[in-house]
Amino acid sequence: MNQPTTHQMGERKDDHVNLALNQQGELPVSDFDAIRFVHHSFAPITMSDIQLTTNWANNTHRLPFYINGMTGGSTYTKDFNRKLAEVARETGLAMASGSVSIAMKDASTADSFTIIREVNPQGFVMANLGAHHTLDNARKAVDLLQANALQIHLNVPQEVVMPEGDRDFRTWSDNIAQIVEQLHVPVIVKEVGFGMSRQTIQHLMDLGVQTIDVSGRGGTNFIRIENSRRDQLDFSLLNGWGQSTVESLLEASPFTKKTTILASGGIRHYLDIVKCLALGASAVGLSGKFLSTVHHEGVAATIDLVNQWQESIQHLMLMLGCPNIETLRNTDLILTGSLRDWANDRQIDLADLANRHSYKR
Image (cartoon, rainbow, N blue to C red; front, side, top):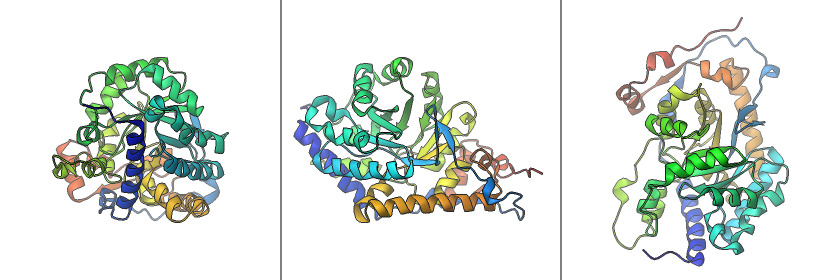
């Protein structure tokens, strides 16, 4: 298989952003809509009791959501990273870059990633690489961005559909284990929108991974993106491949007390964020939503959106009687429709999920 040139890789990065932006205008009905909170008529707290701080990747974060990785690798995507870094700087959100792989091959693209730290010198920044990369490249990526953590992304379906994608995944587990053991910053392993099974999560824990982003189906669809770039073979039948974010969080339910679970994929608004937190996520990542907002409405509007979500989450937690993120895991949740079928087939205890609440008197 011919390897793509760096120019072709840069064009692919631009395609990814434009196609992801197009998808934001057509997000389908979500599994998040199949989750209901049981309403209880007493909420024995006051607004001043509510704290939104959360801990993950060896750091305390002011807000329970963050800017997930998507962009970098070209002049066009550099501008997106600059704008997103401004949002992160002004709001205190953690931020991840897109895959730094291209900068490993072409140093001229490095500034599309280093702009993140340049704009936000004090922020929490994550570098991003695929699981085929070695410990040496992981160190280079972290050093390039002066990153606080590394994201390693898992994307077998994307690679398979991508015309120039990888076809050999045998080194992934060994690479992850070595990077987790020897890299000097925390490592987060994430999917790219195809979700995770409990078997995947257990395997990652066995490799030493302590922070896992289940990143489910429902947001940016990389099978659709890569299929649109093909001249031969049509993989559109696979557009619905994988687990949704909610299904993935249900799969993660046995592990939330043993490891740190993050959630991303198809997050539309503050209510989706709170539902993720109630299902055991320590924080929630968004990429497409923020990408679209900075592109269509600008940096100031995106900052306003973050502030509005912060206040909305606080108000919803007040309604639920939850003074902090941890207590959201005691809320009662009802699942409906196909989501209920998934939980039943995967032997997830729905009765326990619906009867977790206890008043603190």
